[in-house]
Image (cartoon, rainbow, N blue to C red; front, side, top):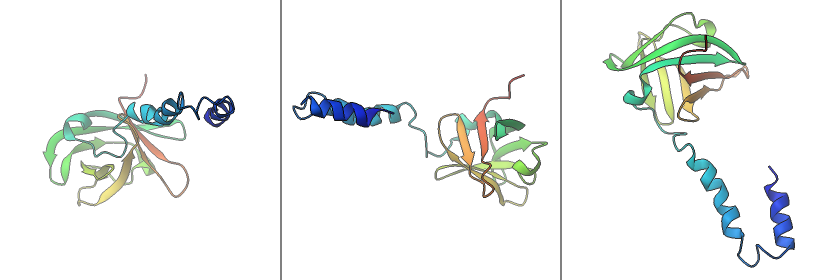
Amino acid sequence: MRIPLIAAGLIGAGLIGAGLIGAGLTAWPLAAAAEDHEAGVPLTPAEAAGAWTVESQGRTICTVTLSAGKADSGYGAKAAGCGQAIPGAPVAWRPTSDGMALVGADGTTLIAFNRWSNSLFVSHRGSGADIQLRRGSPPS
C-alpha cells in the first residue's frame, strides 16, 4: 500500500502534526481487521456444519463435510479422495485454540488448520504447499 507515502506527504503539509488526519490513519488498520474478526478464533460446531473444499496450489482436491453432531473424538466429519492432502480418513473434527483439526478413527490429529477468516482455514506444510479449507462445495 501507499500509506507511508501518503503519511509522509501529510506530515510535510502539516496536517498530521496538527492532528487533523493522524487519528484517521492510525484507525485504518483497525477498520480493516474489523472486516473479519474470526481469524484465530476456534470454530464452533454450528458454524462448521456443511461442505468445505480442500485446495492446494490453486487446485481443488476434494470435499470435506463437517457436522455439528457429536462423534467419538469431537464432531462428525467425512472426506474421500483427498490423497496426501489429508493423510488417512477423517471421522471427526474438533475445535483448536486457533482453528480446527481433522481427526482419524484412532483419535489422532490428521491435519490441523489455522483460521484465517470466516470461510478460510489454512494448514502450513513443510513442503511449502499449504492446504486450504474453504467453506462450500467446489464450483461445478
